[in-house]
Figure (cartoon, rainbow, N blue to C red):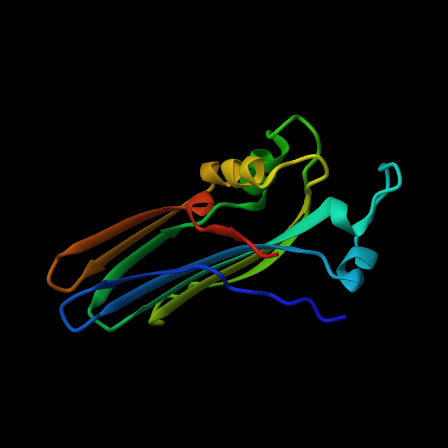
Length: 163
């Protein structure tokens, strides 16, 4: 079965002139597919089912023109994601995570992608969303004309749950 991954929310910020900057964030929480469930370790859990888990897919994409002379991205490490989820109720909630990053000097784009499996048994959507409020991404860009662009994103503000 192929899971339907719906990108339900996209935030895009454009800074003028010449629309030199596009920043987009996507965050969606879906149910696990049967295949995804079969790939995770369920050791230590009492008869877990596929419905006991959710997957967060988070993407940050930045594209800019050559007029950006300095760029700084603060993106949370895996320990930050883990701590935030595990602090919901003291149980192990961060199950496993993976992702990719592309933030090379000289390139006009930045891409961060995370997929995190959450043990969500007994949690409401609101509790999960609140845990992601502690996850912050900071973007700093400085243009040739000296104009700084600073953006702060709380992952919880972008979370959408697919049916």
